[in-house]
Image (cartoon, rainbow, N blue to C red; front, top):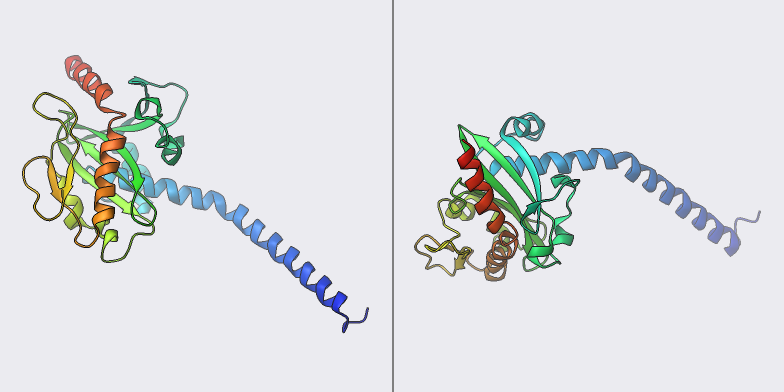
Length: 236
């Protein structure tokens, strides 16, 4: 074959594309189980972090088994059978009305106290944001919150995953005195009281995204949690 012809160049380039694509596909397929395992362990780390248990990725599996006692999926204020909480794709569920979602929930126990850990997902300025909020047994008081993102602006909206922002949510309330859901308002530097926190300076859109995420996602749980918590307390 004449290697100086254009046809040879095209054939060689096509062959290289096929070989490289095959190698990349093989690598992706081979690495997927490891990637999935890392995602699972990171999720367990974040769930534990919401109740103040901070462990390495290697320690996450055993610590999760120690503290998390139940994994539930809530649908129309009832426990949905046959669905694993870890298998629920929250990015798809939030496109549905709150009452129509499969909403995963994790029940944890730490030092004799029960916590209800609720996954959250919403939108920031540049992409998705997500997190977990742990409620105390009264189903009203926040024990801890964890937030994260992928594409928010460093030094601005990306600050939602820093302790200075997340720790503000501790001891905040989500129900008013009548027991109705109010959520938590993210203010522009003048937060006060039980229902407000300060937003990120220069990250207003991402801060509001956190507020909207809490308001939207937690509505899938509140009515169920009130009854679940009451029954659990009565059984003790």
